[in-house]
Length: 147
Image (cartoon, rainbow, N blue to C red; front, side, top):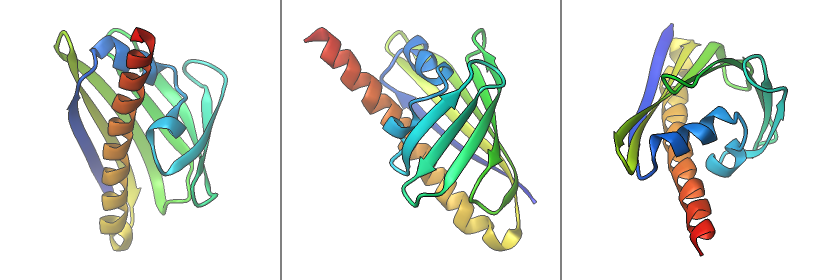
């Protein structure tokens, strides 16, 4: 059964700064507490990123699209320890004001009904943690540059 999980947050970063971080493909180990390492192979569409989870399990994403005009990024999870048949992630960034933006991180998964609730809850929390981590990481690097 196809499920859509979405977390949308307003962050205290310009849309350009947030987009620059997302479009670089890597760095997820700094944003997501559940990820300990993120290695990128290639660049742009078709690149892959290998992520190691705190459990030691691995995830591999293939980058499907990077649209600089609309600030939309999509990836397909091609290897996952999660019980899913399909996992497509989309990150959209919108300007809210000169100093803030909205990040909408959506994941479409094909998951068995039995594991749906647990997995949806886990993904929702991971996405929220990742957006918060992105904001913290970029705000701390901005502050460090100003000192």
